[in-house]
Length: 85
Length: 223
Image (cartoon, rainbow over the protein chains, first blue to last red):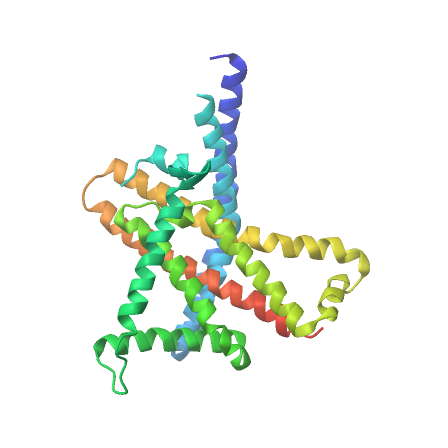
């Protein structure tokens, strides 16, 4: 394999890792915050648990979106490496 | 269970019709459609005033969906229940196909993007029907130079809906392939309950929730 191809593969894998750092941090903080607030809300109003649960899961799934985008980017980068090697 | 390389490779072509590739996603969607049609035919047979077990379960599901649509979109949009319910069942059954070792059709961006486009046309069709010309004028609000940003925001909706579903499903099947590659017994079964069943239902629920919210906002918001 040529040096150039090797560098491309290395940087693509590095980029996939870096993408997942950001994609891991952001949604984790967002989802944790939503779960914490959800627990607080259930503590204050236990009878509304069902509604709080749905709202919380929906909010968490939307917060997850950016993480999923970075996962897709990382998978695309890994796909490029698979094609080169 | 398929290996990691197979998952990352994308859907395989099963056969071609006049040079048009028919992939695994299409065939598996046919399978889901067949299952849903057979279920519908079997479950709607001899409905009674005093329901038996089977009819009770179906009534719970239908009433739950109706209640969800009424509480999210308002009582006057109750007519959306059949559409929303169909989308929910189609996506949910596609998602949980992974549990049978088949490739979920929704782990293919073409499929999820098509679902996103269905939502996109629904949003604009019903908004145009409800508001008419003032809906198109609404894109120039509050200032006319925000027009391109508003249009990009609208075009981004099917992409983000499709990407969310695709990414979750692909991520789930990648993780499942990794787990079943590392440990062969028991652990994949437990993980499959979360990644295939729970995540699959959650993602289809989120898809219909966002569809309902987008349609309601475009249709009924007067500003």
